[in-house]
Image 1 (cartoon, rainbow, N blue to C red):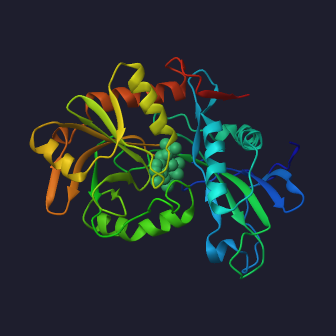
Image 2: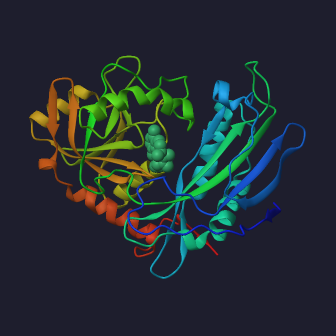
Image 3: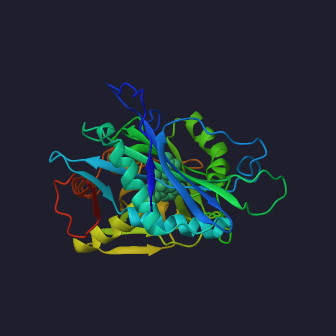
Length: 353
Ligand code: PLP
Ligand code: COI
């Protein structure tokens, strides 16, 4: 893939102080076009700028779009590392297939990410807990109001130096188990990373926030009985010594952090179960003192301990509202591999050179 690079003539001032999540953008972005009959073409890195799109562009009307999320980490050794970027590329194509967006070759995705991160490498923050969040996305650009797949698309990558996703950092969050709204059902788009899933989640998130909870934990859309995932992360429980997480069932996102945590825990000899987990099972485990730890996993959220889970009139406090030992060990191992202080025995790291 040939990438034309045009560098900015007016670099922005880099941020100092707390970064928050997803608020600051670097000097450059990657853009590539798709045209039916021609395929993906005109890969470019250009100064970060507004897009010019017709108001009739299809993405604005029927939401034909997908996005991804990964991070670049700057180690104390000065190396820039990506964590399993080919998994994001493969998931892009799983989302694309569901949304009738044309396939994007895995090597184009990975090459584009590496190239734009390289150009803005000096934007990668180095404070503990910070990284460069990478947001690749594809939008439908045909000027057409009929409901049909677009014939043209843009693939864009923007970069955002970021700190913790939750304001509380590694302090345990409170999660609201949603009993009224649902996010996705099998056969829908739950497994795809597409804006519509997040739009559908907002109403419950507002409700949870109003009640002092950070995010929503979704139940299955049919029986409203089984645990699915959190708004921006997968969920894990330590119940009676075992690590348990909902199995991939078509309505939850197959998280890359989730997959990595499962592999890590198994490598330590922990028993891991991917299965259905009912909210009643959690309530029972809590009553019997067997709900030992709860944590979420995600690129933005990293490993996020859950200190409080609310379901209707029940509020479960987990591990006294403190991070548990297994959650802490997983956090240390994953972030250590990402930053280069823990050996990458799984081959998860791609260096940006
Ligand atoms: N589930 C949802 C709904 C998400 O938005 C995310 C974030 O990407 C995840 C799970 C975790 O996925 P990953 O670990 O690949 O970031
Ligand atoms: C990510 O973790 O990369 C995500 O996409 C979550 C996002 C909704 C902030």
